Length: 184
Ligand SMILES: CC(C)(COP(=O)(O)OP(=O)(O)OC[C@H]1O[C@@H](n2cnc3c(N)ncnc32)[C@H](O)[C@@H]1OP(=O)(O)O)[C@@H](O)C(=O)NCCC(=O)NCCS
Image 1 (tube, rainbow, N blue to C red):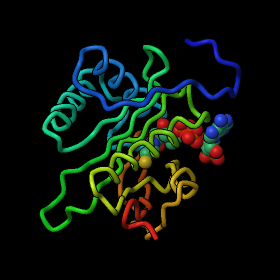
Image 2 (image 1 turned 30 degrees about the vertical axis):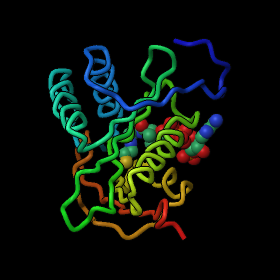
Image 3 (image 1 turned 120 degrees about the vertical axis):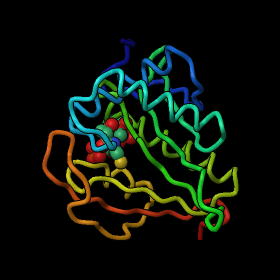
Image 4 (image 1 turned 180 degrees about the vertical axis):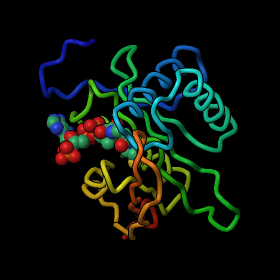
């Protein structure tokens, strides 16, 4: 653990991740902890380390093919958070990208990690000529506040959309944001 003051903003280094054993291990640990803590990121609790590792194997391979960018936020050797920018879209939506799998390690929450990851993902999307970002977040226990503060517009809610990691249905809230040349 790094020696930061309580509430001090950690010195974050944000960079695209590629497949390496230590990176995959830290991503898997982050995913398992997030799901155990009730984070709605597509999985049910309990999530095994093996299943989490297999998920990142597949998604890091997609990143290697240029279909997505997996950003990691680092405090020295420790992965503090991650977000995925999905670039692979149908041929009629080349201007669009999606934000997914936003997670901050519980130890680093409330210090601006997710906000910094979101800004970095938006900058990379704009650099690639994307003008519309879309995302969804669980109505119950999701990150709606984070996205609303970052300028995302609420498009609507799908009721009873997914199971929460510990069971019980939650709706999902859909958000969008124009970026780059698409921004007003
Ligand atoms: C949602 C999640 C990614 C937010 O991560 P985070 O790094 O804590 O987010 P940020 O620090 O950027 O902002 C979160 C909060 O901290 C506050 N904050 C930001 N910088 C801060 C700072 N320097 N000091 C104290 N608080 C700060 C923000 O105002 C925000 O306030 P809120 O609690 O009212 O929402 C994290 O809680 C998480 O991993 N949750 C589980 C998974 C999940 O639900 N992911 C979303 C899927 S769509």
